[in-house]
Image (cartoon, rainbow, N blue to C red):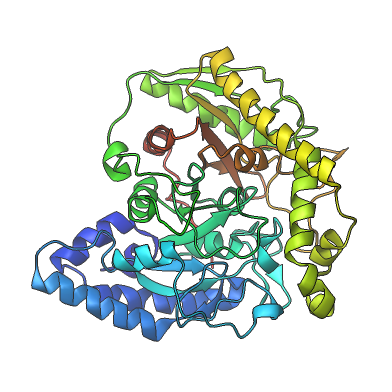
Length: 472
């Protein structure tokens, strides 16, 4: 097998070849390790590598294939784990010096499911401290760079995960999303990211209360089918996650092979509150969504009028970070990210303000449901972000298209889906004149994950993006 096929080819094809032993998991693992050893010193996507463990897991995968019989769903597939998920016997730092030497004795339940599915674990990918921000850097491991432009951020908080996939350092990446943390980096790095309906993929253990009802686990991959087969391995209820959902009875890898006959797609570039958007982003996503009409689907612009959720998002986020990190800041503030310290050091919201935030969040969900009904649409399409990847030295761009924007001005399309729990995917929609990826977001109704996946696969079929890759 050519090294390019191992590093940039589809994981589902690799899985089938390993099953037939046309290629071994062991040699695939070595090719990707070589790629990591070449590219990771440049972009710093992996913060901890587990090559000896990966080689042992690859040998086990080959032994299973040689014995014959039914194989686990991801047998022999190289996979990375974000450093916010516990991995038994492997350091898990949450991007913080607070946990620099923490080695858990149990796996996160989703990590355990991926291992049971036969993955080859390559290591842990970099994240901002406790996943708090939309860029990826911390005092423990430094910054992760965007593979397309080394002076730009890969986004966050799954920046290491997305950068690793874009750079050919593993086809599957387990990631998490609390306000866009799968979708932002997948967008900025030109790969596919999927945030499932809240609760579809279980989470345990959780660190802190802040992410209790907004964090979703999901895949970042180069191919939609790879994300589908990864999601199949992760989904389903778990007793230790009281938010986890019953199995919805869908095998996603099968579902994406079906192209629905009738899909109604609404398209908006502003959601009724977006203050600014890069004209290149708007144009590229407008061109991309129009391509979905090639399937005979109805694609139409919709005028969305939603109240800006930014203020209750701020209240929710700041209050939860303050609560979660109150003891950390007392003992570790000098060793923590100063932006996180400032965020978590502000005044407490009153109980009234916090309850009002919950009330507004509930109303916002109803308003979002109303959009689908009012416009008679099945999915809503937006840009993933309002701009392309910004510089490494800023927490957020202060202006877009010459207009001053708030701290969430670059990400107005994503954080709302964590508040509502809806499924959302980001797909590569083109490149800017600077050669930076642009993303298109597909948002479904709650539990319509299969439809979002089907629309994503249908777009991939008419506008495949995998032919272009960063030059590292």
